[in-house]
Image (tube, rainbow, N blue to C red; front, side):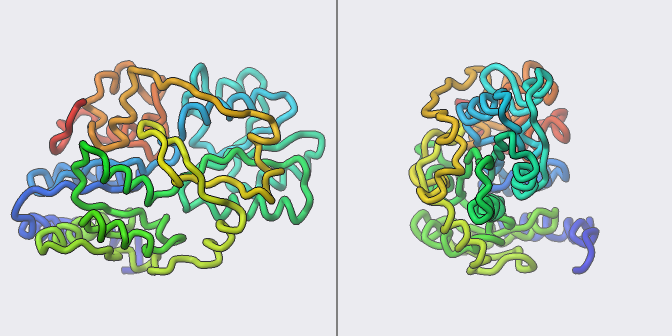
Length: 371
């Protein structure tokens, strides 16, 4: 295939759906890790087309969605500081904190700017020596190399007014936490292709072997996802539990070594709080001691912060795959993109946003527990 439209060919999609249904001799439950995959599945109705053969449940694969409320509140405090230019990707601006969001802080006079790269924020710091420039470093392993490069470059150039608010998380520990949960129903995973383009898939092999679940590295187009589902179902029916790579045009087993080395040079593993899931040991990234001068939490003395999640928001159940968004009582009424209760309703990769935009008027496919 050479063109994007070829990955959306309806005839090929129907053939793959037929093969999945022929192969699945019993219903199987798979979880896609990435929110980008969730949006493709829901937008194209793949979950409905596979109903009865495969249930797709949506995992915590949206980095904006799993950023804990206390980290959002730290960002809001920094953005409200008159001596700070706060920079972020655009998908963080509408994420609600305890009392408001970044857009509301900007409306009150906060200097908040959308950038397309952390290196843009570094360049802004060089041009604005009279201000402290903070970049909100959110993401999985996909965005970690660029953020590591910005910090490494700031140290090399000796830029004293640049720092990052780190909220990085990593995928494998979250998969392990989900598989060890007492209410786990996941029988196989579709792993995120962009994460694996950086990290490869070696770190998934012990998970597949230990928990006896197939893990298929998958792209983001409809045919990518359907082929990934077929590979996973074929493994389940054959009693196999291996890591396979559907996304061969972008991913290799070893990943991108220079990017991995840069991330290890700048960051270290740390325990991290995940919204709706809780603390997961060694699941996050933090700056190493030699780069601590560029840690916004240290520079501004933010310290520990504990914030209670709003009880009405069921984002945690959605992120663990235990609840379809349309099964949340607040969905589409008390919680909308204009007035969200939680990040999954406003993030471009959020499951609630996907259902609101593409599937709020149809019955959810499959079965989910509601408690």
